[in-house]
Length: 174
Image 1 (tube, rainbow, N blue to C red):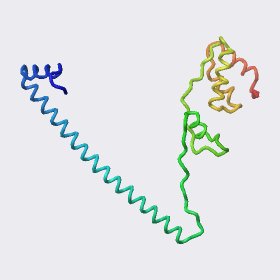
Image 2 (cartoon, one colour):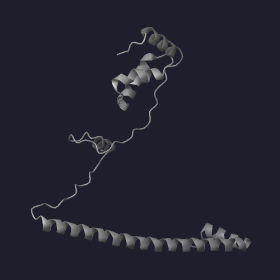
Image 3 (tube, rainbow, N blue to C red):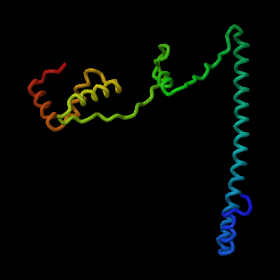
Image 4 (cartoon, helix red, strand yellow):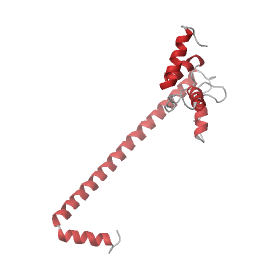
């Protein structure tokens, strides 16, 4: 800190008013410095160990490649594919979902949980629209849509659906 700043003036005032507190502060500061130095030493040792490990793995890989090229001289050495570069989140999702160049996905990303709206009998067009969006996003199979939607009926809509299903007498709704 530059000399003659307010915080240093306040520190000097505190030191004169409470020497025990200043001593405790100095002890804590010393412990912090010791801990920081110890952490830096450990970090550098860990870095050296990792560098040595990487060197050993690289040498083993090179020896393996030399051995395979000696046993089969016509075989082209295997080169790992370059890591894909994603520029946007949309590009990433397209690559993951397998919509790139007809290749199947390696794994799928779990989508965020969406709640299915409960229908109580009013604003049916809005509810149907939301249901269709949910079915599209979650890729619900056609024959499961009615069963899933009926689970989220409530109040008058639920009563109507129960009466409708009873009136069918066990017939399956297409």
